[in-house]
Length: 409
Ligand code: HEM
Figure 1: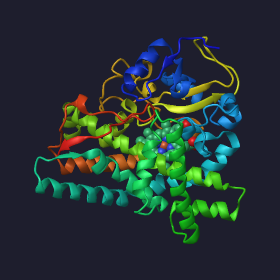
Figure 2: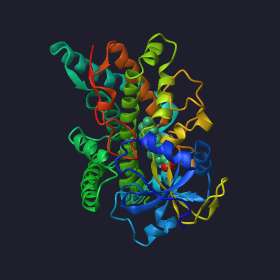
Figure 3: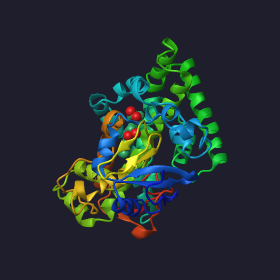
Figure 4: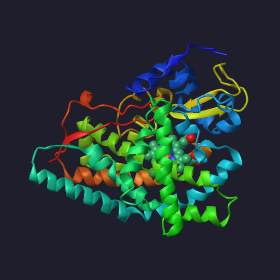
């Protein structure tokens, strides 16, 4: 039953934060319409989101807990790219625990720290190339998104999962398409066809010649004990972990670069050593989270909210991380301001509860290394466009920039 006016979320995410603020001013959870006519409760209050993320009455498994999906609705729409795959992100209870346990040990804080030299080497090599370019053509405009923010996490995750150099351009292109929340059925079907071809080739290659990488580890889990991981789960786990492993961190790095270049006082404070790179990363995650809105969760039973609203059994829920990140009840009156020197209060940009991000230590490590190295190498770095000429990527899920034109110096 519709209990509040239905808002249509902008499929292109042109003003994610304005939209989230508007929704929060109506209530902590507001019934919205997502592309393809999907109704969902958009939760933009930090406190309510945190509560729902650990509520056992909230599931992520559409096959068990979303009546519309079970009835065959929406299966060819953009939402299939998020809930129609079978991995830890779209499962509940023991299935979730089983799938998470296979991957999480590879991303502990200790294992991640061991990757530091590799991340430094990758960032350094990319900066060397940019320096050569800058010397050859001083003053040239470079897109830092494609020349730096993207390749750092992409190269790291591809090395971890043993993705060949040849396959990387396809992986990058196809994963970016998962963020396109305006995609129609034809585009969705094509995307699944292409990404499953690439992942199928990767699995076959590792089966034929296993290596030290994570794909080989998962293939071995599948082959040694088929009850641990089905073939579909293996494929969809690779899709999630490789995709989430770079696309999100690309935007963390890009968002931090953009924030610093458009807040010169804050950048000066970082340069003066008054603010650490870790503070920059945490503030960027709060203020401009790479996952702005995450589809979808489902109410297993009626859930009555503190304001008297009821989320009915079977209703879908959209986790509004962008809204929560700027919620003044959590972050104070200046929640809308980017200020890395603020007393950091907890943010939810990596989620919370059983589905919390397994890659958070890696994302933090990559972003800190990449940002420090970039701003040390090019102390005169500046945006080569007016801030309002830099365009956000077309998605209400992903919060980031389509390009970052800069001048290096
Ligand atoms: C800035 C970078 C990142 C952000 C903002 C981010 C954000 C998130 C969020 C919000 C969730 C929770 C989803 C939910 O509640 O349903 C999540 C889960 C997840 N993230 Fe990340 N992530 C980032 C980087 C990474 C990296 C580097 C990896 C590498 C493997 C990764 C892998 C995952 C996986 C596998 C899950 C699913 C966990 C589960 O459902 O149990 N993420 N991430």
